[in-house]
Length: 202
Ligand SMILES: Nc1nc2c(ncn2[C@@H]2O[C@H](COP(=O)(O)OP(=O)(O)OP(=O)(O)O)[C@@H](O)[C@H]2O)c(=O)[nH]1
Image (cartoon, rainbow, N blue to C red; front, top):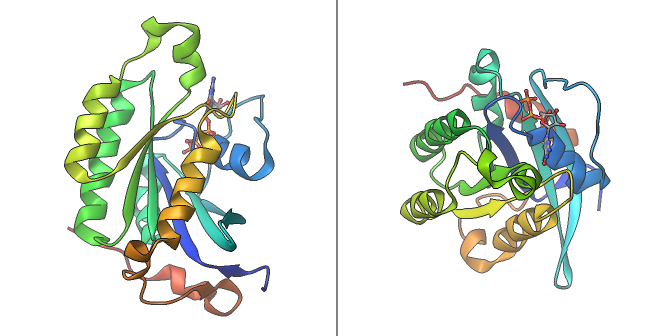
């Protein structure tokens, strides 16, 4: 298998500083970077193989910039994604408003993209319950409505991070998910430009 071979395109979406880069960093490099927050510009790509039973599913993860300034670009990155991890910060209710925006966007433009909702920074909530601004049950109701999976994670402690990406890989590998797959895989080496399609406008 070529190191560029990707089975499933996964896109990280969500308001700036909700912790998208930290989630990917924890999942791929098993670490949590401390120090001044650096916002993502454009998007970053990383591929990671995940063992699913006797198979290996390589996830190609696009970590998009959350800043609204880069929103139009994020639309380019979710094009053709098999899964979208839509993140919000459990301690910031405004970040959940962006979740609704991205979910609508995906429903309108990428109907075959499976949605995962991810409430981040759960360590802060565990340390002090009063900082929680987004209720678990409210989000679970919303997740049921849109047929999405819900995870509450902490990139600091690692809680639920592997579980989230493992679920993405398992779902992709499942028959139900694969019938939606038009192509078996995308070779980034050959199809780099394929990611720069025009985006969906309303
Ligand atoms: N306590 C805690 N802090 C976190 C966690 N995840 C991210 N952070 C912090 O939140 C800030 C933003 O994290 P990023 O991962 O850069 O956020 P982002 O969503 O990629 O931001 P953009 O690139 O601007 O879209 C950083 O200071 C992180 O250290 C977490 O699980 N727990």
